[in-house]
Image 1 (cartoon, one colour):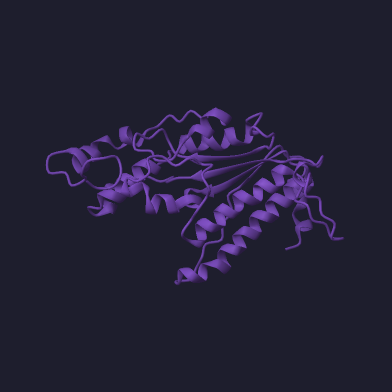
Image 2 (image 1 turned 60 degrees about the vertical axis):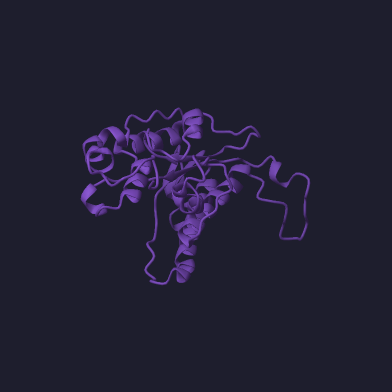
Amino acid sequence: PDRSKYGHLFKGVDAVVHLGYKRRTADNPLDHFAEEKQNVEMAYNVLRSAYDAGVPRVVIASSNHASDWYEHALIHRRQMEVLDPYTLPLSDNFYGWAKATYEHMGFLFACGGMGFGSSSGGEDHTGGSQSDQRRMGVVMVRIGAPRDIVLESYKGDAANYKRDLGAYISPRDITQLFAKAAEAPNIENEHGVPWLVVYGISNNTRAFWSLTSARKMLGYEPEDDSEVKYAADIRGFLVGDGAVGGLGRVGLS
């Protein structure tokens, strides 16, 4: 698209929050590439427009699915306890691939150098990513499960119920997280690159994604815990007499 048609919307703002997403329609997961590619292009257009307009901070809705292979293959089989946001993002689906691509693309804009190549074929292998070009702050929020947990909808599926208890984020916590992602004064890593990946969950007892980067860099202080909010349902379904949930915070015993 012609970015000049909406470039004025990015001028003179302190931060841009990108939540846009085009839903996929194809039934075959192998056909999701083309649709998710459009979302990658949308994220690029937002990042590029913000960069060109001099916006100091962009916050993008990534997803827990950027690294969902670890969850699918390891966490619920109790082969991994907690996933850090800086573990290599691996997904087993095109939705997660697209979100991981957002994150890596955001890193390019945070570096400012935009690599070592040029239209003339010249290459700089020794300083291309450490140039004097402007570095734009980029925060990627890997949103968990921002919805109410309705016990009846799980139809006895204790493993997925436990999963969503760990992934839950309340309305006030997600509001706080995005506000702090936009307003935190310094998000530079130890190498001086203003690029940050955080998980978006509440202070859940059953959490399996790390909140360390959100707490340390943004000052995120979640106020809710799904274990408390849904305590009555949990007692009846997971730990009460005749409960089917089994032992452990994730999976089934």
